[in-house]
Length: 319
Image (cartoon, rainbow, N blue to C red; front, side, top):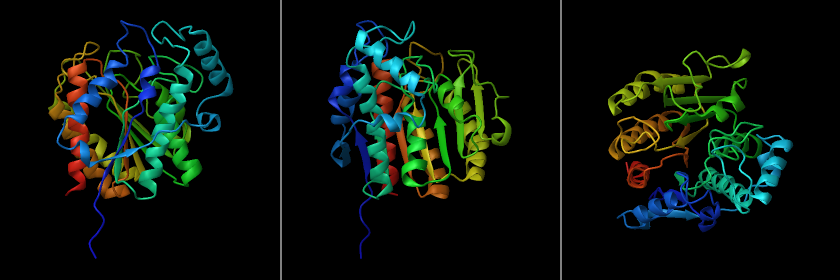
């Protein structure tokens, strides 16, 4: 009997464009429009399994965020008052943030039941800077952290791996799991750069020592520097931790064209990092991978990188 064809899931919802950050803000709806255009024009668009996004429930948001934080975000959105100097919101932003988190959870469901082998969530607002009690850095709710807790709470998985290659350190994700030995968090990021955290000596707290792995890299680092970190540092640690599922905080702002960083990576480079992670995931968790959009602010650099990333997710399924 022929085995079923492997597929890659894709999450997108037009309401993600309704989170209005203002005309000149770098985290703007055009980011998703550019990515959607690049994907829809590709020769692999028809191979994607489209997954309908539905909002996360408040109880699912509470897996990570305290009620006071959620209430604060809702109030600021109702009044369209920025949450901090670089995290503006509109009246639609609260509902969009629930839909963003929920889109990731629907992708997880599809992987768990076997309808897809991996998935990419083209969502906004991003999430990895949001701590349990603070919105910051364009982020309202921490999508990847909520996803990890969802896997544990509603799908019964024990150990979750999170790989964050956004050029900025995922401080909110680290804060969420810093004392939790059941979640492995890895971040490679430019340093010094916003938000200033993510030093190599930040490795976890108490019983979770060693389950946080930070690899700060200097300005003008190349894809060869990243590949060396992935193969020589991340791979053995991730294999040792042996997670049941891997979540990728896939920011593409380490692209050489990005206005917020000075790292020298191309779309092809992000594809190579994707291949390394997928190969690792095959060894340890049956290829169970969800990739979640974080940053990336040059429209061409972002859209070509997303297209290459998704292409590698699909082509890996064909191996």
